[in-house]
Image 1 (cartoon, rainbow, N blue to C red):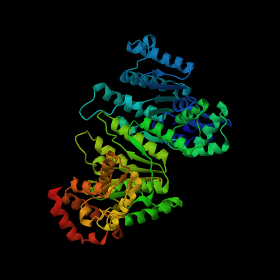
Image 2 (cartoon, rainbow, N blue to C red; image 1 turned 45 degrees about the vertical axis):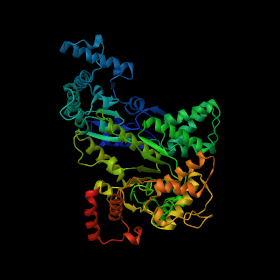
Image 3 (cartoon, rainbow, N blue to C red; image 1 turned 60 degrees about the vertical axis):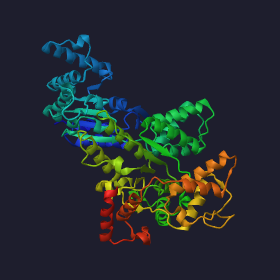
Length: 589
């Protein structure tokens, strides 16, 4: 076996993934490297004292594999290409020799674009050069772009024979002893590893390397470079603002943002403008896979849930003080419908001042698309950190490890997502919030320590103080003016309600009632709510919730809590009695 270390480029300040790839190549018998993640962006490196930025494939062909005698690239659109004229001439020479032997005419009519024909031809070219007596001809690199479109993940029992044959052809090349013994490297470039054929994913001679979104240092270097070349006149102080607030963006997206400065009317000095443009770019790129939530409030706006608020305030102090190693990986927020679970979490995100996103449906009917969507989400979340990630209706969204009927897609997606959630390197950087009123339907893997570590139960209001606090919060939140200041006090300052008038209603019900009452007032030409507006709405309102379901959801929240102090005395139930009550109510849900 030749000394591979001499073929590893000597780079300064190269990305960590490039160093990892060089080290693994030089020290092992690996022949295949799958690069995934931020593969459509620029790569920063320093060579000969100059800081440079190149597209990934150009970086591989011109820098990383600069010592190779033959570099071949392939994708469905461009077909088989070589970056240099000399390499293309050498490639065509090998193809002509094969045409003579096999009776084909690729050299004259053009190299094939069809995946199976192209990979088979490349395989024969590489094997032919490896049989040559010249060592210089055995230094070869093959780069397959958009490899998820070449080695597709067909459904079990489906997929065409050529699709499967293409994966087999690559597997044969990767496992060829001559390939493993010589300086041959195969690089698969894809946004999502999971979208590729399982046969290709499992190649024994392969390694998977993720290319992350640019970190703060890379963003600063690129902003300085574009600022200097385009003479944008961005001050050093403003560069510090930009590098901080462009987390989650690719360098290409940052370039688009900076180009807006040329058009004028752009105030980069306002973080709100940068955040809005960043949000638009990421949401456009993710095509509805996630949505940015702008927290408008902090925990001071949360009523009823004093125990939960105190718990989250303690955690917020740890985050703000930088003690990320003492913060839970994630939270499971439980409680009946209308308890204010989503509002609590969004207020917590506002308390600690970090971006907040909500995951949307990433599942797709097309083969491989679901896995690719998930990888996109994971890559964006990693780049956005610190970020709060909300998964509402988590019991339905997450699925299970045993999901069937979809050729294993649900199982693979579940495993990948839970693995990412449990990565301790993200502790304090990506805060997970799983929200559900049916935690009993949530997979145990998600609820264990190391993922959703802290389980916080929420309970419906059942005291006059609870409803008074909610009334104050909703008046402020909805911008409602009322002629009365309290719900239970005597007129004219109070609405003279009784607890029994509202005790069956959740916080969401009370908000809906106030919105209805506001509508009545506005239709009558009044901006101020009167007592009769609210009383008439109360008399007419029917909450679409069944008492048995509410109690069942409360009991499940109690059962899932990881702290006794979070449970009100009313719901402090012995485990055996709790189990019996849950079982008795199960037929009603």
